[in-house]
Length: 159
Image: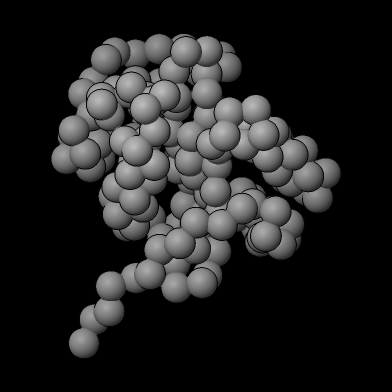
């Protein structure tokens, strides 16, 4: 019998820096992250986790560590960019197929928060499999530049 994976969200502070370093140093992850240009080490992880924790403090919502059956599967969540709430998800390669159920679970937070009328998604132009976003109800807005790289921008109304 195949069991449905148990997906839970934790804080990034609960994850060993070595696990995040290994995850973010994987070439298969970097392939779709045009802004990932520097080496990940303990200092990079400390800065990353501190920045994501600051989002939680400032905005009341941020990025989580994502666990699948209590195993670190990646990170993702929300980050306020101006007036928009952007959603991002970065999974370890062995968990790439769990993007849709993880995103569906995350979107429940956005729908429940009256301060989030919509969520945006910025995907690198290298991404070709986009049907999952459409199944969530997101619509293509256009191409946009962020951090010196081109992205495909999608929007999902949550209210």
